[in-house]
Length: 112
Image 1 (cartoon, rainbow, N blue to C red):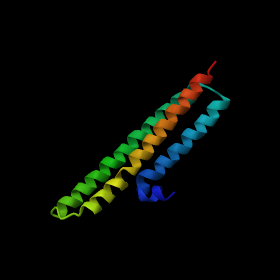
Image 2: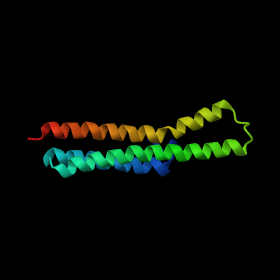
Image 3: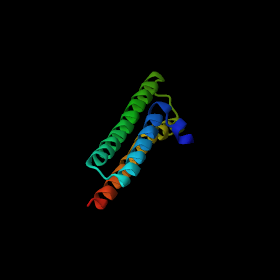
Image 4: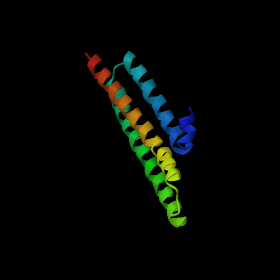
């Protein structure tokens, strides 16, 4: 759970909540395989991916602002660490998106 705090709780906690919702909808879809569950999983997982990318863009804008305020005297190790932290939210969003896609494939294959 350290990556949640490291990636910034402003974006990582809502992404974790979205992951929990997608998993709950999948389990519910296994019992009641309705079109509504399928569409909700699809839309929420896509939203999670875009939300993670938004977190990266906002973080990158903040990093570029800090670099410009520091007159370009930034060590490469600090810059690399900042990019690593910035890439955590889109990576987590992408994982949620891929899980949602996998869940929709499973639910589609189980449909009668």
